[in-house]
Image 1 (tube, rainbow, N blue to C red):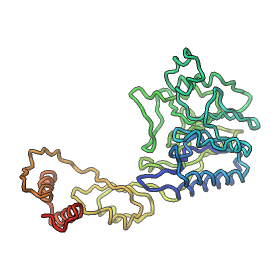
Image 2 (spheres, rainbow, N blue to C red; image 1 turned 180 degrees about the vertical axis):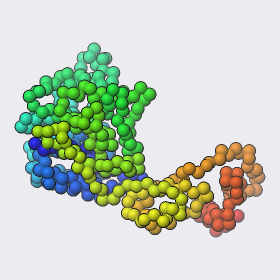
Image 3 (cartoon, rainbow, N blue to C red; image 1 turned 90 degrees about the vertical axis):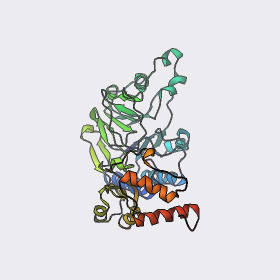
Image 4 (cartoon, helix red, strand yellow; image 1 turned 60 degrees about the horizontal axis):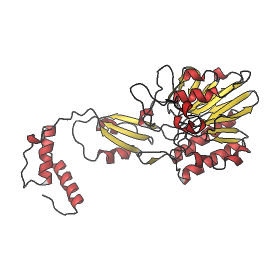
Length: 378
C-alpha cells in the first residue's frame, strides 16, 4: 500500500497581508498530481487544515475542491484536527464523508479512532491537551496528568497494538526526543519554557508504531528515528523558512523505512534579499515574495517604491546592521518655538552626526503637511 503524508495546510494563511490563496491552490493541485502519478492509496493529513478556527469562504472552497479531486482518484483520506482548527467546523459532514472514505477525526472519546486497511492499522488522534482528559478520568487519575507526555502515556496505555500488522499513528502534537526539541520556525506559535515544554511528548513512548505521521511543526524533520516524522508545511509560511525544502512523504507499507521525500515546487518562492540599496537594485528582478534587508548607513527616501519596480512582490523592508546611537533627551536643545521639522532635525543630527539634507528636509516638510492637511508647515 502506498501512503502520502502531508500536514499543516493552513488554508487561508496570509503573510503580512499577502494572500497565499493562489499559492495554496497551486500546491494542492501539485499534491493531487503526486497522488495520481504514484498510485497513492491513502493520504494522511494530521492537523491544521485551516489557519484560523473560523476559516474564510475561500479557504473552505479550497479544501472542498481538494477533497473532491482526491475522491475521484479513489484515495482513502485520513484527517485529524490541529490546534488551529475548530473541531466542530472541521467535523461538519464527517458522517457522510466516512461513506466516501474520507475520515475526519476531531475528538478523542477515550479510545483512538482506528481504521484497518489490509495489513495496516491506522490510529487517528486529533490535537488534544491534558485538560481534555478530565471528563474521561477519575479525579485521582487526573491528578497524575501533569504534562502532555503523561497524557499520551495514558492514552496509549488504553490501546492494544496488534504487532502482526503495520501500525501507523497520525497525531498533531509537539514531539521531542530525550530533551532535544524539534526545529521550529517563525510561522508557528510554540511556547517553550526553560525546562523544555509542558506540551512536549517524548518520542520514546511512540516506539510501538512503525510510522508516526506528525503535524504541528512546520519544518520537515525526523524525531528520534526516520519513521517518526514531521512532513512540514507544503509551503513556506515565514521568511525564517527560506532555506527549507518543502516536500511530502511517500511511504510503501512493505518497506516503511525506505520512504521517499517528493519535493514540492511553489508557484512563487519566498526569499530574503540583503545588501545595500544599490546592490539590491542590481540583483535580477523576481516575482518571488520578498523581504528586503538594507545595509545602507544613510537614510533613504522611499526605497520600497523603487525596489518594487524590480521586485513587485516585496512586502517587507528593514534596515539591518545600522549602528543605532543611544540618544539622551538632554543632548537635544528644545525651545518652545521649534517647528516639528526643526525638532526632528535636531534629533536626527544627534542620532546620525549630520543634519538633514535639503532633499530630506523637503520630504519631511511635505510629509508633515500631508499629515496636518495644511499647505505650509515651517
